[in-house]
Amino acid sequence: MFETLKRDLDAVIKRDPAVHSKAEVFFCYPGFKALRSHRRAHKAYLKGHFFLARLINFHSYRRTGIDIHPGAAIGSGVFIDHGTGVVIGETAEVGDDVTIYQGATLGGTGKDTGKRHPTIGKGVIVGAGAKVLGPITIGEYVKIGAGAIVLKDVPAHCTVVGNPGRIVRGPANRNEIDLNHGDLPDPMLEKVRAIEGKLEQLELETEGQHDCEHCSLTDCPGRECAQSAEFRVQSSDKIEG
Image: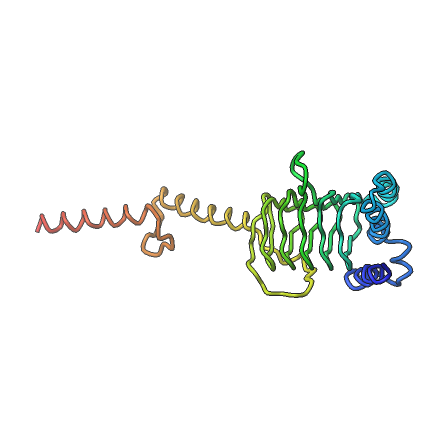
């Protein structure tokens, strides 16, 4: 118990540059306080004292704004940053050294019984406002971008962004926590830019300004038209000759 408490405390100090002292974390950090209360509630839950467990959970939620069901299994070294709006469901499993930012949800997708919440592997980063839903598995050291909605399993060491969540970076074989959220690709923006590029090429073509000889589009319809027109001119020259 004390070893888990120490690891939780060390996790905050290591991952939050705003920390000035251990006392500040112990008495003032809502994420740390919510985890302390949850561990008491979870212990009561496992012993069958469900009302007591819920009562501890309820008072913790009122004080911190973080709702962790007493049945959720949470490892050590977990850091809930800021924490307001974080929701963790009954059958969720959270591994060691996980970081969860404000507004994140580890929830279910319906009224199914049994395992209905996600399993989060070691060292995972769950970005602000991200939703991980259903009995899925998130592999070790996965990064989930802010606002992502993840509905399917994610292999270890990948990066997921978007709605629905898409893997935008494959396994990086990193075995350390990477808190850098400013270097995430935007697949939708890349697709929009590709479409804009094709539209510009089509506009040039319709205006008669399209240079097919230097066109970079291999599937450009203007290329076939230009080649066909050139063939007709050459055929006409031969006939006249």
